[in-house]
Amino acid sequence: MANKLELTWYGKDEPILVEPRLLIENAALSNTAADPDTENMLIHGDNLLALKALESKYTGQVKCIYIDPPYNTGSAFEHYDDNLEHSQWLQLIRPRLEILWRLLADEGSLWISIDDDEQAYMKVLCDELFGRNSFVASIIWQKRTSPDMRAIISDGHDYVLVYAKNRELFKAVRNKIPLTEDQATNYKNPDNDPRGPWASSDFTAQGWRPNQMYTIITPSGKVVTPPEGRCWRQLESVYKQLLEDNRFWFGADGAGVPRKKTFLSESEGITPWTWWPNKEVGHNQEAKKEIIALFSAAHAFDTPKPERLIERIIHIATNPGDLVLDSFLGSGTTAAVAHKMGRRYIGIEMGSHAYTHCKVRLDKVIAGEDPGGITKSAKWEKGGGYRFYELAPTLINEDAFGEAVINPDYDADMLAAGVALHEGFTYHPDGKLFWKQSSGSEKSYLFVTTRHLNSDYLDSIQSTMEEDEYLTIACCSYDKGLDRVYDHITVKKIPQMLLERCEFGKTDYNLNIVHPPVYEDEEEYDAE
Image (cartoon, rainbow, N blue to C red):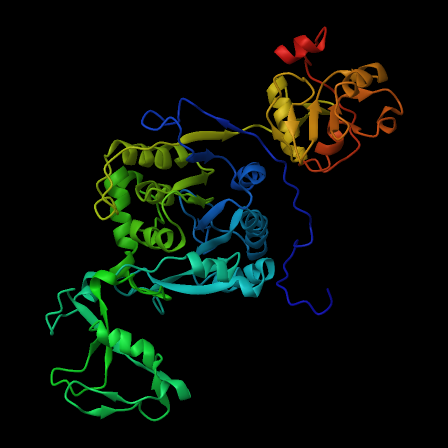
């Protein structure tokens, strides 16, 4: 597009090809005893590959995505290599953001923790990817309690960038923030109203509207009109209804300008704003204490976020039962908070601390052995569960001669499921027809086989197909010209749809099958 405003960097135009991978549950590491039907997921592996694996099932399903990506500060952390050159950092972040955006529900929101080093770049990149009209706010989180005396100018805050798939839909479903104890003390009851404490608000509005310019007689008999340049906030008929319900305060002497009463018992909270002080959502030291209490100082995580910060984000963006995703899970804070708040969640972490931190932390939450963070305020006790997943290895390997071969770790079912994932089909074999392994759009199916195809074999399949059914067959080899014979059957060699999207970046391999299964007939194949 001509005159397009965009952020450019070295390597931006290079295509990023991602091979979809299967997610394989490691039942030995799952924790499902208290909740056998849990949908919560803890995934160990590269988050780009994991996100690609989630895409077919969860596109448009995630209500809230929170990520805390590496900040590219030039520091070397124990658990992350954060010392990335800017273009590398942007190249790392962009494809992950693209998939995350596709996973968001229409009313969903994306929240990104970031600091001054990359905040501006992240904002421009997100504007380019999502559109500037998707930007909601840049939240200032006060992360420190006092200045760092070693700094030139101490950084006292981080940012949380907020984007919404659809701003109006998000506004309609986002929750207000509950009143703090200090805010609740502003509610008084000077007139002993039986409905309890209340706070008053201005009953005037800016501007001049003829039908909102009536006179009001106060209880003392004083006649009042709106101040110059303002009008009453509502029509006279509405005012009279509210007056009848004792919804106005005219001052202790009954002669003041009317102020509308809002009762504490009726308060829905306050509209979120962009200033989040550490008194309300925690700070770095609080987060560090939470981690030390869970893992000891010797095994603490370097850059955790306080549970109260994540709690506020999840509260604003979701309701119980909604799906939350964090693809930079770190020490597991987002998953732990979502669990305590009754949300479903997916957490992805590539480092070994998926085992040493994330799993251990969630196990403690489930067992009721995590008394810190938001446990008390959320009234969390114990229960729930999650499933632990690993990424399957790549489907296509290179042999010693540089030829492409199917990974021998894939059995027949995994091969079929892997090809289905690559082709955008859902793998669920039909119990009666062997060729209905996977389904796509309505009346379309995928069949993966390692056998050589001929016309007799395809004729036998076609005889069992309905007139409005379509079938794609991925195979190792087939008779010449067979791919042009059938109107409702598409024949492909397996590598033709895989290799063009996998890490090798080639499209002209001859496929070699490593120890392929041999079947006497399709009944034997189906049984396998």
